[in-house]
Image (cartoon, rainbow, N blue to C red; front, side, top):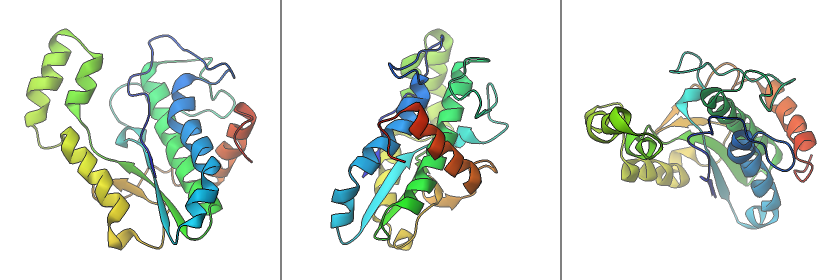
Length: 206
């Protein structure tokens, strides 16, 4: 199972769902949480199952733009909203969700979070002018970027790699097991976020 649907470029002005949840957090973190838990019976029926939730290396402190800053007393960014912060917070929360799924799902089901790589041509769709030219023509030539087919292949690898079998709760960066941020590794915060999510979106199971 791949939790791939998400918001890449949050709106310039804060938007919320009918439940009052900031839309980027709802889409990138609460959506995978709700869908995966709803499908738990089907996952558990298989001899083994793997769940991947897409995240981003931008959850790390020090990445470009406004800093990641998840405040449990302001998860919906009523104060200090910015598209960068909304995106980064949601991708941090996606790792928390993945780690909690791995802990809560049956032992035959593993869950990992994966950043499949930076795909500038996808990001170009949300820009114009010189930024679009940079993302479409210049950055794809650089070694730290990837293509849509390469990113898809990285996700397919994570679904099938024998070396990932039998355990979960990892952060995968392209085709490597990597170290996420200190906050992302904090299991107490992961459990706290899960509890918060069930309050923010009552349809999610506790």
